[in-house]
Length: 151
Image (cartoon, rainbow, N blue to C red; front, side):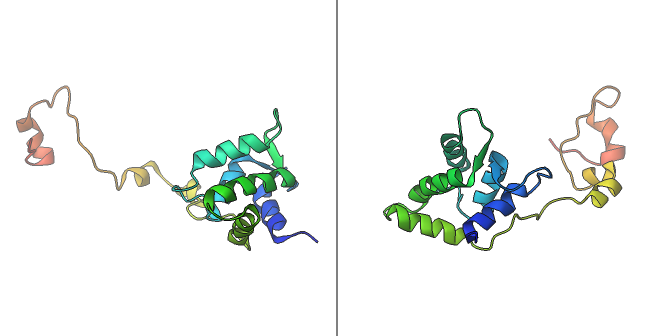
C-alpha cells in the first residue's frame, strides 16, 4: 500500500501531464507541490531553493525525478524549513504538510471562458497615462475629449 506522501507525489506528478504515469515528476510540478502544500513559504524556503534542490537530486541529464529522489529532496527542504529539528522529525513535518493535498486550480481560466473573452474585456479595468502624439500635441486640443489634463 502506498503511503500518503507517495499518493500526493502521484497526484502532483500527473497534474497537467496527459502522458504521465505518475512515477516521475518534472520541476514545474515539484515547485507546484512545494507551493500548494506550504513547504515553500518565500521566507525560509524560496522558489530558488526548491529549484536548486530539484537539480541536486535529479540524475545528470534527466528532467524528472522519481519518488526515491523526491524523498531525498524533501529531506533537504525539511532541514531548511524546520531548522533545529532532527532530519527524521523535519521530514515527518514536511510529510504532515503534504497530507491530503491536491493540485490547486484556482485562478485557472477554463477553455469556455477563454473562448468568449474579448479584447475589450482585457482593457476594461486598465488605466494609465495617455500619450498624445501627432495632430493632438497641445493640451488645449485634448480638452474636448479628456477634459482638463493636469501636469
